[in-house]
Length: 180
Image (tube, rainbow, N blue to C red):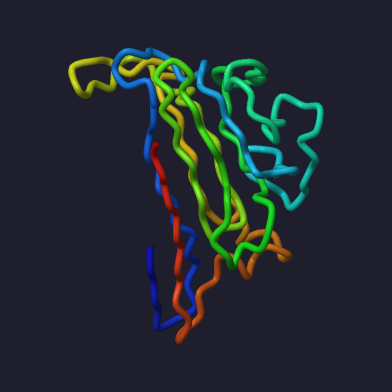
């Protein structure tokens, strides 16, 4: 994704593609294995600038584990992930972000990007009313891995530079999905 501007502009693009590597034969992604190259996350629906470690929490995907193993229960809303993780490494470089594997089919998706964060969303609000490919999409029937700058970066002074594009600069967001 590329962008330019003639005035200072807020810009934080993300690809919100849904994936289920089991195809139509798998009703849920909770049995997919996920690895995230992230040691920390930004807690809250609207991050406030704090960053917390994922170690020994339901958000710890530093080693591959089933998406559904430790699904967090929310005070409000359905259970599942809708959380922003801090990707390891230099965000100006294309680097590993995530690996998702569906064990029955053996399908694997590796994600690389040049963004500081990735949002993990497990289709918590899919409720069976969305139809496609001859089926209804129910809760947890797909997963999104959205590389991006930190949500709410505009309101956190330490993160603001991630999302302000100045005249003469080019926004360049590279996200690569590799399937095998």
